[in-house]
Image (tube, rainbow, N blue to C red; front, top):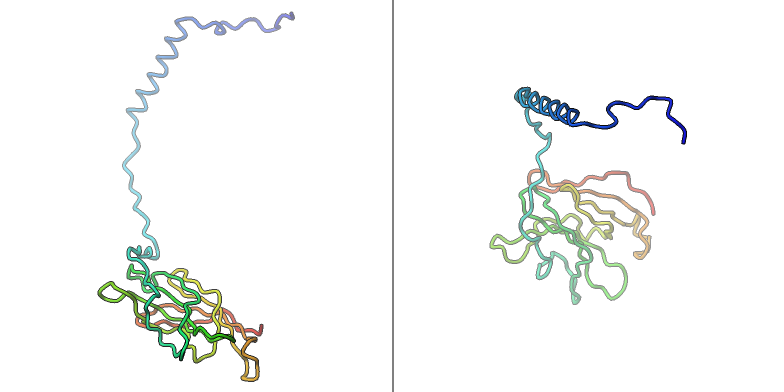
Length: 192
């Protein structure tokens, strides 16, 4: 075994006096910390720029049993898609439904309707029409985000285009402003 070139350190073997010194130093640090306190906090709570969205507590309005303003003749209306969200910020959710007639063949046009609960809390009623079936539009990609309804609208550039094959694609958004839904187009329409 090779001898160390450095002589043994005196503190390599702790003695009781070392423990007493360490305990005294720790006690001194703790006592000093209890005497030195930070000043009172003066920072104010930051106020958010926009109010937080209202929490929804009620169940969304159901689509069952709703009298949609759709003329289907001998066939019944079908809810093809639906989504929910608090569109007017009142804390109660609305339902947005894409509805068309249950035609045995072809591509029936869609209607997009906003539903709310009846005043007595039973059932639902249509409060707005976002897309009228008379416009001969097919609706895809329905969503509600940040109180905005968005969808992709498929349509026809002329009456000569076969009803099976829409050739115009338009993104659309609707947002509640005061007392009505206002439609906007996030990007320009283009052919499919």
